[in-house]
Amino acid sequence: MQRRDFLQATCGALAYAGIFMPSGISANVNKPLIGFKQVPPSTQDKVIVPDGYEVRKLISWADPLFSKATPFDENKIIDKNAVENAKLTFGDNTDGMAWFDIDENRAILAVNNEYINPEIMFNHQGKNMSLDDVYYEQNSMGVSIFEIAKNQDGFFSVVLDSPYNRKITAGTPIDIQGPARGHKLLKTRADKSGVRVLGTINNCASGKTPWGTYLTCEENFDDFFGSSDENYAFNPSQKRYGLSIKGENYEWKLDERFDIAKNENEPNRFGWVVEIDPYNPNSTPIKRTALGRFKHENAEVVIAKDGKIVVYMGDDEANEFIYKFVSKAKYNPNKPNRDILNEGTLYAAKFIDTKDFEGVGEWVALEYGKNGLDETNGFYNQGDVLIHARLAASVVGATPMDRPEWIAADPNGKYIYATLTNNTKRTQTNASNPRNKNIYGHIIRWQPKGDHTSTSFRWDIFLLAGNPLKYPNDLRKGTSNINVENMFNSPDGLKFDKFGRLWIQTDGKYSNKDDYEGMGNNQMLCADPITAQVRRFLTGPIACEITGIAFNSDYTTMFVGIQHPGENLANSHYPNGKSSTPCSAIVQIRKKDGGVIGS
Ligand code: FEO
Ligand code: CA
Ligand code: CA
Ligand code: CA
Image (cartoon, rainbow, N blue to C red):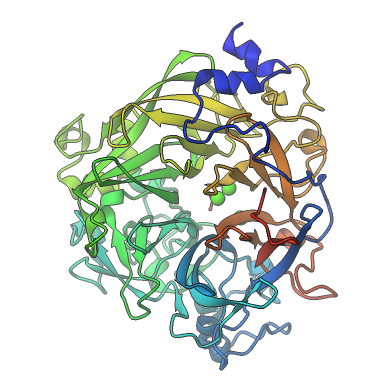
């Protein structure tokens, strides 16, 4: 049987195990990997978890991190005090996060605050922005770092005034390091040497290094730039990175730093991976330019057999690429490893078809002077290559993908999975992106040939999301592990727990009608990589995205991000109920018997 038939057949699980089975995660017939009962799709304004589980809010937007902060103001008065107060409270639109142990009962959570929803944040719904409003938004984005402590009942609470508590905002000084440090395209009037930038924005997903630092990844920075000159002529690189006269209408150009007509290099200082030491609240975060500039989703770190550090990264835009960085130095657990991410090779992925839904691949180095990355194509040094990584990856022939979101390594670090969330712009299919106008998204995976430093790999498709109710007769129905009970669209967040369960979070259409009928609100699912079984674990409130996941050290508490409930003024009052403003929040989930989540 052809693989295409396999994938469309009802006995689809065989199709996966037949290609290559992740070794080290052994299927146990006596004890299935996934032990909970699936929750049905939901359109309710709450978080629903399976029978036998409990869910509780940990923190929501504008909750204090310090006792001197004022709590959420339902009157939404934005003045100088509110602007300062936002530096002392949990930021908006929670996204990627990571857990850092302190001791048995305490930990630090580092959490991204990706962006803001003006229609929720302001009484004027963003239609009458002042400079204070802009600063308030800037202080509500970035990264929130705070200590949490375990209560008697096993749930955690935020520790106000902990010495670890810290906000990193759009105004926090950040060093620029790596090959692009001091590059002429990174120099501005305020920073004539191109080595220090104010702030990090659009902090989407994240990563954690083996040496205990947090990687926060800058994604849609172009949304926040604009031009006061309506005739500003954008160059090809600026266009490729999405810069425009109005951006997404956030009006940050009221702050000249975000006005391209006045500061044309400022956008080049965003779109990087930023390393933060959460254990040292006085440390200066660092933009690691060796990892390339694009719309970063997450940064999945693995240690190669030879000790080199490999970071897998997706660039979330239609027809953009998947990348990996391989460090020059080797990781040494007995040394600080402070600057290991400053030097190495950045690669872009080329997926080559061999059959339906599978193939081989090649990592092509983005190195100045090689593979056409030279003067003939407009690259004069490695800094150019990294700042214009998208253009460089196009020159070397990387494969345009269906919006690469999170990348996750299995617990043994042998197989890598990536979500391709959707791509309504695709007009030409290939085996790795097999559907035109891909509205449902899919998950691809690859196995390095040899080890993670290798430049070749083989790959296959783990699942195609779809709607088998609506489209039973073509690829839109999804792979055979997708059925009327567990269907969803737009896989985005993706993470393995240490037992080998693959957790999938969605950022999709929640209309629950037409193409999306029967899918309900955004949700979180759990997949068994061996059997390819997929089961819905959680459903979110109205008009939210589910994004961000972390576990405590023994995997008995799971932390999940609920982003922008009630976006576009949808009728949500999550999480505080009654007539309250909907707020993005982190929830914590435990099994009533105290067991491992998902078991
Ligand atoms: Fe911030 Fe591509 O998600
Ligand atoms: Ca995402
Ligand atoms: Ca998304
Ligand atoms: Ca979102």
